[in-house]
Length: 115
Image (cartoon, rainbow, N blue to C red; front, side):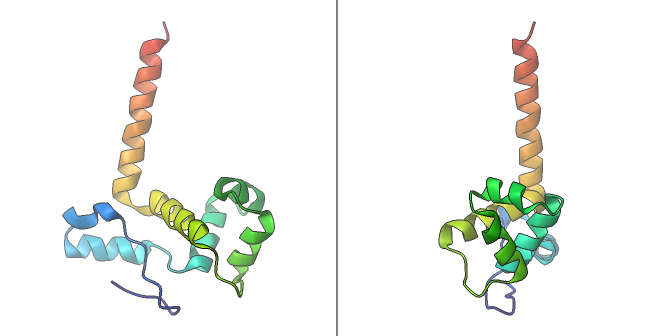
């Protein structure tokens, strides 16, 4: 597994065991490594609005801004885990497909309940 300059491993989805080595490598390459890269990536996904991302991550707006800028202090474990999970949810093809499947099931259930 590749490591970034800080020595952190790139986030990898637990479901990648069925992937070929080339597919695993391509997916790992596309994922941002490190807290700053992940925070910046997520900030771009939320149209650069730190308030929205802060609400989703359950942290203060300034925390998002500091980590996107490259804060001196590393985030706590809970925030690192939330960042990793959100990044994987947006990039991992398995998780994206699973989320689409869940949404489709919810839509079908909702349609069945409504007369």
